[in-house]
Length: 176
Image (tube, rainbow, N blue to C red):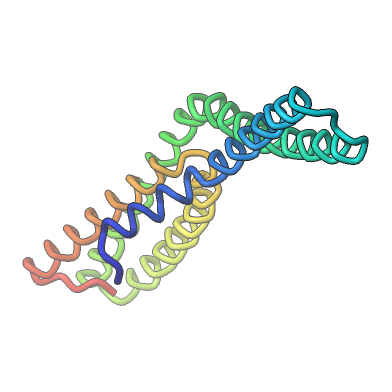
């Protein structure tokens, strides 16, 4: 596994590479325009030279503008969607936590019940498991809109499950 500073550098590069390319293309267009003015002031450009410089300037400025526009539109969409998505995401978090608690309670309760109750608990546990799978899919959908909050939620759920497992082991209840 590479050192953490390499991982941070790669993440930084991945996040800012499109912006750097767009900026470089726009800077190249500006430099080509300045070069064309400089050469034109010292001597007359041939039609081929003038056409090539204008074509390169146009191509790099269009490419840089398109990339910059895509980045700007993506950031603006994220800024617009993120606040409105937060409340719906909070509801998802609440449902997720409730179902996870139900599933854990059913797992814990299934060891201390009679055999006829176990079949009912198994069915309820299966239903809770299916609902958790549905919520996992919904969480993946939310990852596109609010990735930081999804990572934070997953970490909290992992901690809660580890705490439940540790507590269950301490009191002698085995999860199934």
